[in-house]
Length: 268
Image: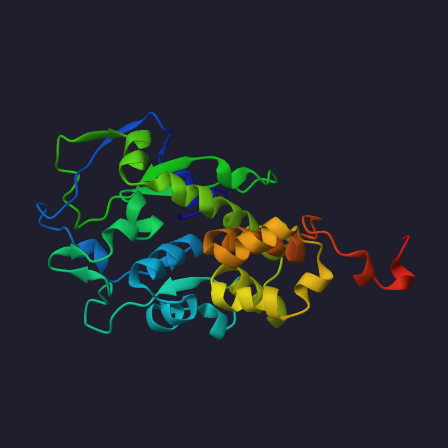
């Protein structure tokens, strides 16, 4: 999901679409330009994108991140995000593109699914801003998929491309990275940046953090939740988002155990 700031003047000129609005488009092996959109990309991956892709490839989070991604975290950035690593050929082709199409098509990233639509959010103070579904047409000069009589509503395209589960999982994360506290900072403290990276993308490291540190001695987590995040990586991801909210915005979504509170702070 591409989440952009509507206050940008260029964005304001884009014709916004509602779920019932229609557009004509077709894509597939029968379209001559079918894999041209799979090269020279700067494709940001969401945590759920990585979850689906690594599962498809039977890789751990850490192995997938090492083999298929780059991150501005290494170069210094306000908010750590992960980008898909393109191959080093002349066209910077997606590593999953082939003459037969996408090799991981059923688990392709949300940005690939939503095309030829772009998805935006408003930049207001409402924390539910990223839940507002705002779309616009992205018309690449090489794409001939618009030369068709096949018509869709935005709602139909979303259903056809399996976007709903991606949006459901992406919204909580977008709320985190668009938090006003983060947006005001040009550069994050290294420890905060590393926590965001771990809690968002590296489920292996986050699981070790939860179960091999003093985490469970500090926070009062229900036994059912502990068992759930131990067995189910998707639940672990959701829990990671909850933890990041507590870390970044100070929301009291996790309860600290009484015995973990210094005695001189009790009763304050």
